Image (cartoon, rainbow, N blue to C red):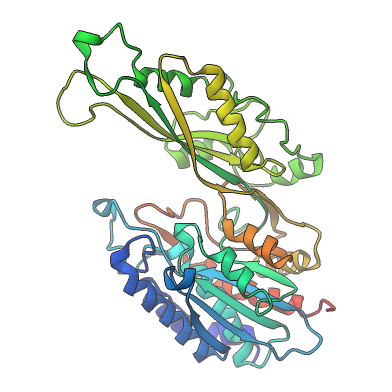
Length: 458
């Protein structure tokens, strides 16, 4: 029996295991669910042992204060590459619960789609690569060496992963890493991600008077910190959507003609993107397509605002302070430390002397640009084409995936980013879901990737 025959026979079992996996409320950011995250690690470990992986262990992170990580390996392929497979089993909180059409931890199938928290991000994809390995192991068809790490705190930014990789560098030595936390261009068009934007996340405070004041008594004589903050934020973009921080674009990597042509293959139009976002019209930099704006261009976005009285009813105050949370998405060659300097320079240039201000960098991550020409990327490309019957597209994604930087930086290896989620899967929001045909094709695609990788000389 071939591995692909095995996957057909195991379809019902694999779906049952996916439902069981999705029923675990492994919410890593909430302390009330710490035991559930531990149970998720145990579930993954049990599954890995049952399929034939070896040296399976649940490993602590952050000196025992972090969430657990599951390690396993299978190292019996002589003169063959070693592939480190990455996934995660933790999920986001479910709020707002009243917007879910089905209970978030009671997996529900509607037509060809399964609804549950974590369905797309990323339990279906984690299980798909595990089931690909199972099919190869059970049919004695695995011809590459495998190491697996599946973590339990990706949804809180993988705060302990880099130090874990550093501490266990020898244990995790490999020829390439496979990150399965990714998506496709559309239901029937696979993609290989070769670039991810980085992140700088700031909190700005603007301080005026020592305390909230009566707006009737002091209004017109005191510069309102909320108004100052709004003016400052308004000035961070010009009329065409370009960020006005000084020297913000100096290091931005310019797309080649070949890259722009490849990105143009993605089935995304202004109309489809507007519909997905629920808006009537798009906005952003001129002379760039929506795909380029969201993958290859840096951004600055306001994520939250707070000032004065925001409760029910009215209260006429002149607020003492105002706060904004602002994130910038960075593209290759931009660096978080330089962006912070540019942000502070903007504030020095534009904040009036009537207020005091502070800027705190809350989080940051480097952008990623991966090698499109590596032998393992070619193996992924061949695997996807055989599975879907169409050549995959290369894609730049706008979000940040810190693990990709960590795998690349700490282990010094190329990373292949290949997954099967979709942009409209509702990840992080209510009614998250996954297209089940791509769960099964994902299993096949990963199995084919391991087969093609086995042909690469070590």
